[in-house]
Image 1: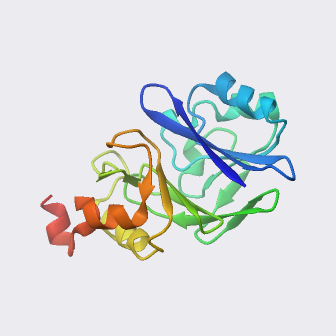
Image 2: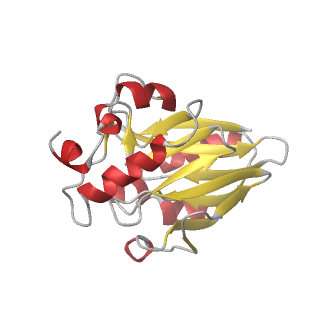
Length: 202
């Protein structure tokens, strides 16, 4: 199993999750750079099964339909954001488990940036956090559909997950492209807030 992090656009990350033995793959957040991502999938000789969008914003979804036309696969997003994403085939809910070959991808509903924002727990090893958690920061709550209170609770939920998970965010906003969840719990000021009042004052 592998998770490949690909820079797209100015600072976005897309991901290829793939089962090398079964030659099956899922792509996460193909907002741009579609032909480059498709080239990587073809070079690895993978069969694309899923195109997963962590939330509805265009920089994470704009290429999903084109990607499906090029390589197939089903477009998946949380049910609350799905109406704003063209071509969604699978409307996800918290706790759903998707499969790319033998790889289990658990959906964690983390509203706050958008109502249907999700994180993806991949084989209890990797945590793809979209625009919920960045390295050293969290997603904006002041855009339409955003909620500071929901973001606080979403970050607390992520904080309850195992320390050894590797965090892969939706943007390259921090000092490094990925980190352990343990280090984010210790150093990310948005995860250290103890109350909604403290969080709102950050």
